[in-house]
Length: 139
Image (cartoon, rainbow, N blue to C red):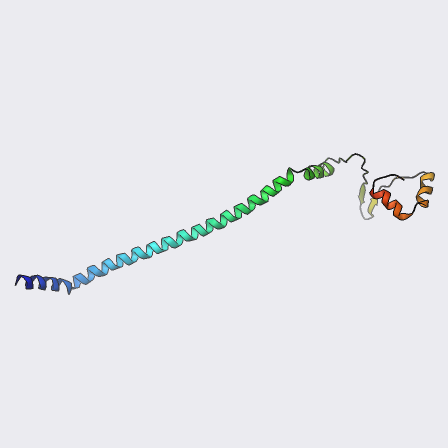
């Protein structure tokens, strides 16, 4: 009888609406907790991907900056700046200035030759003149 009474109490509790509500509420809290955890995990993964993209961009910028720094510290850059900004030239180098006039176009300042030099220039073949030009030698 005690066994039947315990069994009937348990059976009554098991089949009651209160038990169904308690189990439903517990399952609801568990599902909400699980969904909340999944959403947090998704957000964290999205942040990780964003930070990885940002790191890749910063590394690319760093490499570009290193290349620029390497170029700026090179002799070629120093020579270019000396030529363009300080109007410097190497020894034994001739400089031709180009004057840009309004609508007349470019005017090249040329060297005037004496009569003897003009005769020599006329007698020398054109390829020889180019050879002297490129080797920076005078006729």
